[in-house]
Image (cartoon, rainbow, N blue to C red):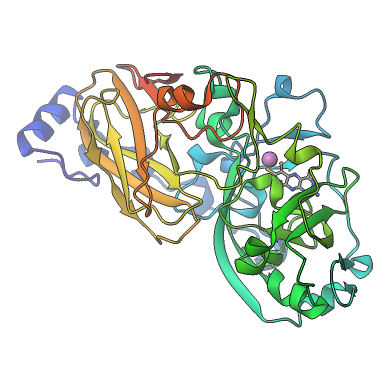
Length: 422
Ligand code: MTE
Ligand code: CO
């Protein structure tokens, strides 16, 4: 009897049949010892030499064999990489944390290289005492650590009218999830002394795009952070080094990077990013505005077009991510047949509000084509809609805030493709 290191097959009989058919080479994820596999029987090259010493890699980088795990862009999406976006390789990741070097980037005027000694944050407008902080000043306020997702409002925007981009990196990769260390914006506003008519703040970036967004005072005083660390280390330049605004659960555009100024006002500013951009044109010509919160959404990351099933029929692990700007994700459903039958996925890992959640669904694949979908339920009871349900309410013109259910078609060979079943 051969032994398998893979997960237990559904039945012993099925395991036997599979290993006989495959000549004992592969069954349910494990290789048979009897096959005489040189990878385990022979001394490998890395065991015949001494490796590099401790200081060879003072700042560690991933294995050379992981060089395909990178952010990628879609060149035809934008005219120029200076005002552009690239995407997180969600299909290569597991758990809930996005490694710093893989967080998608969205810049409107390229990456600002801000010198920390020259960094200043000003608070002005309707305050008792306009004030300017250095980076050191900021670090003397009480620090907090929180894991939050950031999702660009345009994530999945190309999918609004139908399936388009072939890979969850491209359809859903404008999201990342990191632990921020920072101080509450509330503390800084209190230091400046907000006047009674101060109802809004304007966050402004130091980059050449002078990115500005209006944020209501309630949110600014609630959970917004002025953050200087991500996953324990300094923010990366791409993510706003040395300081960015964190606006939990709200669209990524408001998370101003290279934050240089917070102005307090009595009404919103109606700047470009809240009028001609980041608004949703409805069928009747009116536009939804100030659609800040990111609704519950999910996506199966494996299998997906860039990550086919390669092991053939048998025990198969489906995994994916779910998130909501309104709370946690207590439940995700998965369907294998385009929505006819739904089954509950297994959630694993921390369940934190406004953070990515990881789900798994394990099943015995019979090798027939699949129409895979996932559907998130958030802690408010909201259920992720189909794309058709979204279009019925919002029409065909939208780009932003597409949280519709995604479908992957998996053929009998395990290859996956972006399709729509609504
Ligand atoms: N802040 C500044 N100063 N400049 C920018 O171009 N882009 C915004 C936001 N903050 C932007 C910015 C947009 S649209 C998004 S989605 C997020 O930053 C992207 O954050 P990331 O690059 O860390 O993924
Ligand atoms: Co954005």
